[in-house]
Length: 439
Image 1: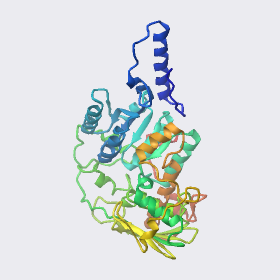
Image 2 (image 1 turned 135 degrees about the horizontal axis):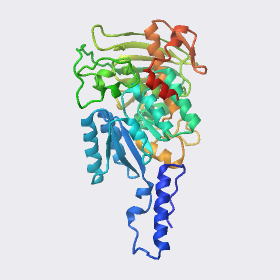
Image 3 (image 1 turned 180 degrees about the horizontal axis):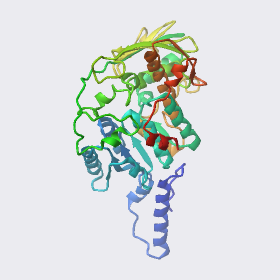
Image 4 (image 1 turned 120 degrees about the vertical axis):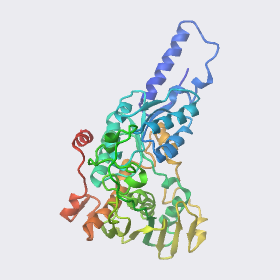
């Protein structure tokens, strides 16, 4: 008898039940097979694989998410979706090469992917302005969701987190930091008092290029530009607009390096400060938007957050780095996932008893953790609420820079004591997508 444990009801279970009833029918008919192929049994049987549809096939969508999920034996990518035809074809070839044959669908409109009953999970690796709208539509379609960071506004992050909670849905964020040993060791050392009382945190984020303005050009035949824009305000197509380096510097689509790189290092900063579930209570900052350029978000900035426990977090554009300063020393690193450094390197050699350690055990990387969370019926490493809390901190800095004055923030009510600042918690989307996202 074939018994496969799955803690959550999914379409995987439906396919498994079909397989079991089919085999039962064979035996009932008195036509017992001489053997059942090994590929039909066990954790990696076709009936037990989690099926994925990948939406957004740019550098990260293919290079990180698609390729990472292809390495997992207990899932299978059955469809790929992008507004660029050439990207769809590239992704399909990678999938079919891995699985040794045809069977991966290419889809232009993500709504057609979400309508497929044979897909359990939507993997969303689109530009930032699509993340929440697309994730909510996927949840409404009954899909589990693995979505890239960040959110575009405070309001939409709260809306997504509430939606996930009400639906009791499985939603995970494509962030690896809590699984990266260097950041885990830094947070662990600080939370367990290795540098005494934490006083100040310094985060350095990458400075992005300045891009010259371009004249509108004809939309390539290979691109569904209206779908690429989606909920963002309409603008003429330009030759490099859909390049990630470019759209990340435009506020309609992203928050620049503050929300891109900040979603990584600021998370570790808040985890170390026990504030990953709350956030700061005050913020001030200044930033410079390059003149006469495509860029509409600050390229350089200096932001200071203050937390309820008195700790201050300084975030600047410059060298990628992370530094925690306490009453008895400091720890940190430079560069992405750089080697550990500190006033006393012995703090990193200490091990902590699991029952007293003030930090959770280091999880698997985000793709593997997500699949395990589905099978074990537990929350993933990064939840929708965690994403919202992290991105809210980053958006607070952007709003303070835009208004040019210090602001106080209530992390419980999620409100400023400033009417103009409160108005910037949300942005207008194009009407059709607004209605869909809120339905």
